[in-house]
Length: 280
Image (tube, rainbow, N blue to C red; front, side, top):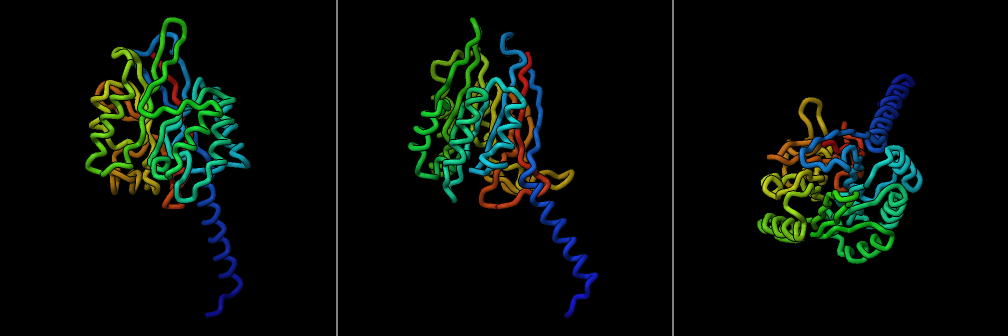
């Protein structure tokens, strides 16, 4: 079948529109702002600003991630928290992510916990050493105290339990959280970095105040009025794929992430940079 000139023009326009749509859906960063209030928040940490990054998967926004770094610097955060999958184990290339983390350190202190891709990669020990060498606080079932005068908060980070059999993951997650809480005062304000958002049953009883997670990629493909289509660990139409949720006296914030992994495209689900303001 021969195509006349008008049909070729129409098909070309459709192709341009589709390519442009998918390009912007996967490369135009959306910044989400949340103000979260906590009774336990120490006075001296009131108005502290957090940048939450998850699931970068070695992706670059602009040359050497300049676009993403400029957006982070513009927010003037007090600290930057990364909840795993900074690399992608399928196409392992740590250099962009290490450079990104190093540049983030010039903006604010960086705290990192592992995701399933770091655990899967088989190269975590080397990556951890390199991140520590550039000043990143790598939290593996441990905590870090942040002090201002006589007040403090604690940032906890745990290893993703993906290396274990599925039926054991819950037990491992509980064990890892307990390890991270060692020597942390029970009544202190605590932020937990844990890659997986779906284990609400465990986080609800963890005696923490704020959980930051990723992993779900916002459901990868999002439909208006419906939300995400599919997330690992939750299946179709996941409940916990983005945003802030109340779980008992705590809150969980789930990032839609920045990069892609096994599925190469985001649809109605732009890469997300999360900015959280902590309020008393």
